[in-house]
Amino acid sequence: MASMEDLLSYALKTSSRLGASYAEARFENHITEQFVLRNGLVDVAGRSVSRGIGVRVLYNGALGFSSTGSLTRRGVEEAVKGAVGVAKASAKLLTKGVAMCEEKMEKSRTIVRPRVKHENVTTEDKTEVLKTADKAIVEAAERRGVKAVARMFELGLGRVEKHVLNTDGADVYLDKPISALFSIFTIYGEGKYLQRFVNLGESRGWEAVERWRLDEMMGKEASAVSEAVRKAVEPPKGSLDVVLSPEIIGLVCHESAGHPGEADRMLGREAAQAGETYITREHLGSRIGSEVVTIIDDPAIPGSFGYYLYDDEGVKAGERTLIERGIIKELLQNRETAPEFGVKSNAAARANNYNREPIVRMANTYMKPGDYTLEELIEDIRHGVYVKSYMEWNIDDKRWNQRYVGVEAYLIENGELRQMVFQPVVELTTQALYSAIDALGNDLEFYAGYCGKGDPMQAIPVWFGGPSARLRNVRLA
Image (cartoon, rainbow, N blue to C red; front, side, top):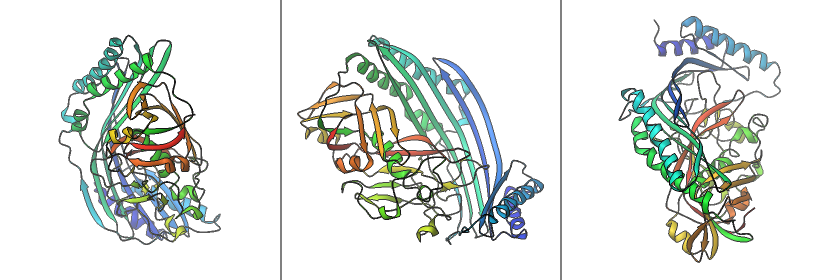
């Protein structure tokens, strides 16, 4: 039986024989365990495996992609023929061909070894972690005289193996574990509801789940939401100062710097699938925020949910600066979009599985922290609101108008936290939000998510993060 590397090499040789000027072959192996707990009962406990090879070729200025789950020479040859066939048909319709920028290609082998392998933990222990966390939510609500009316946990544990070869000389391999959790619960009392969701994820083994200490975390979350249901007052009106937590700032960075900074959006290629962008070529180098705002996307953060050292086109990854000291600086680029802007790729090509084509994606997007403690951010505010967590958010297709609804939030009076406020709404344009930030905390934190984009849809693991941020003179909606 041919080795995986032999099959990838065969794909490249076959592509060249059929006339492709460039080809890449990517093997992916995804092994995933999924556990779903609903209201204390195990609803799903399953395991899935997805393995195959994706082939992309450049023929006469057009790209073609095909894939196969048949890991044989015959299966690979059929996939190559399919990709070349698509490219040939597309070439007849093009008025302007695709150009792939030249990049330095390397050979690399990256293996992330978990401290505790998922397979060494019993199914009973995996589900017990969720049951204990669920119980913590119920008990925290009951102690405060309210009720946790709905709870759901989804735990995903797995391994991702990826091997990319291309005709420009790339040979890069990645093998990493994945641990991910999504939880949502609803608290009811005093005639009011509040909902809270939590997303966690790392490129680590079971040790990540152990470190999360879900029972303690979810107990604290449920306690705060229960208190908000019972005691929160209406938020203040008028112009005031607002402190947003790392959780909210991370989402802001992802949605209003990361997505609009994707080069394919600026070129209009994502309008139908995932939206547009407020950024035009003329906006590059222009001011969008205050001097303290610097936003980075960095795939190379060890243990991060969006971790990789080489992208799916074989380009070495590193820190990308989307906004620097309030100035729009850099877009996320792959080898196809980069020539349109006269730049090099910055390794943003990602696919979520072997049967999807690599497209421009984020990895770990965050705002660089400042020097202030949270207490120092708050003590300089005479009248304002601190929003620690959110339950709802919205943003328009151009990533310009955005809205965040708080869950755990507090009134600030004369530099001190006072009573909780009920569902404060922060609604600002992207420029107004970034421009209002005058100070940043030193409390950099990251949160996980699966970012959706493309057609067919590709949900891909990412981190978003940042510090606490103080916004001056904003108005709650």
